[in-house]
Image 1 (spheres, one colour):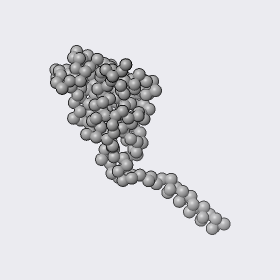
Image 2: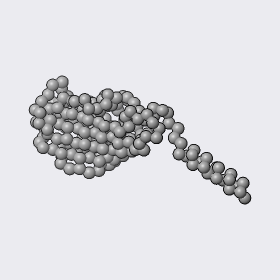
Image 3: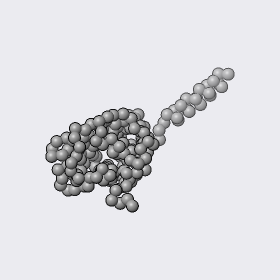
Image 4: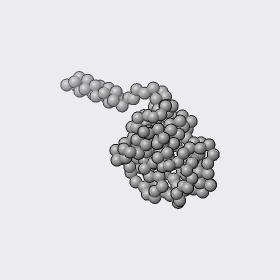
Length: 191
């Protein structure tokens, strides 16, 4: 009887260790540069949108200084696409500056037992002639090993849905299919 209990205990503890062990590569959580468009994997996000005035300009200059280098091409692609649907065109110099900031809690994480969740925060701010016009902040949280590149289209779609509005809440991606389509397509390229 003792042998059976001892064998059962060894099997159970071996199964417990095996289930908890995560066989990730050392740098599996590090972000990767991907060519847009990337398939959206975000389901929902929380947002906060504030507006003090609408933008009068029809052109904008994109400021990506606060976006990690690895995500800049993707963010530029998605933001330029959605702003084209708002009637704004990119320009090298403009009175309207759209600033984008992206924070990823897992950038630079090298330990296997780091944080158990990842949070990505996207902030888009518009200023015209140096005065703030509107801003939108979108947050998403998920598993630490989730690929943040798949969240970027959804974050931008949620921001696009709430540009120029004063409210906050939770937005499901399933409820904004047109915004998701606009993230992937530029109005100039659409037939």
